Amino acid sequence: MSERRVTVASKVGIHARPAALLAKTAASQPVVITIRKEGNEPVEAGSILGLMTLGASHGDEVILAAEGEGAEAALDEVAKLVATDMD
Image (cartoon, rainbow, N blue to C red):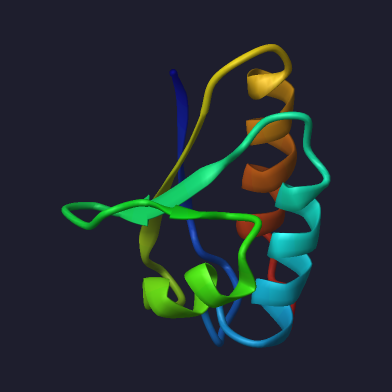
């Protein structure tokens, strides 16, 4: 399983618009991507509801994970988005 640790750049965290953009990008990947905060259970990154329950705020570190063919590229794509201020 591949992982990426990324700091949330959006000033509102992963909430509302950033969550919608992130879910759309994650859902379009060829593998299932999960996201979690340290010590918490992962949620599917392609689920807006899952992302909203994550409680990830600006500056929080999140851990993205995926496995299978295309996982590395998919994680790169989603990590780039999390590290961007989407507000």
